[in-house]
Image (cartoon, rainbow, N blue to C red; front, side, top):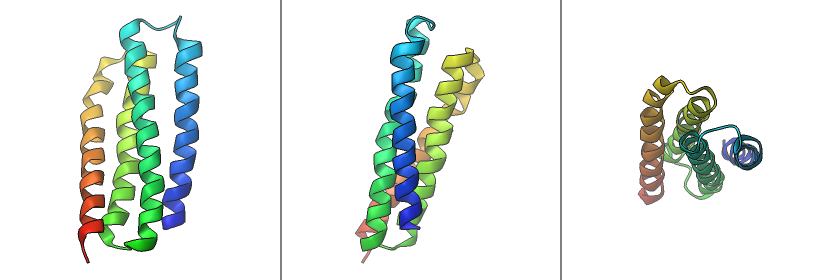
Length: 122
């Protein structure tokens, strides 16, 4: 399980860098500034949580508790929901995708809390 989260984090990091580069180079002239900012927010949070997934993979070696595993799943789900909805919103202009974003944000917050709980427990 620790390797799964570390690999997912590394792959998500690569995808986040690619998304950021795509936004900076291919979308800058195609999207209005407000939607470009939405896309960039998705890429930024994807990168943050790619690092969090790698940290979960490492943390599982030291604290193999259920909350640490839950944090990994929450970071994965949160990244897909949060960053994914922002990418789709920016690329399509379909504002209703913004309704999904807070669910992803809740998953990300819950992931951080689960990680803290899992590391705190003896």
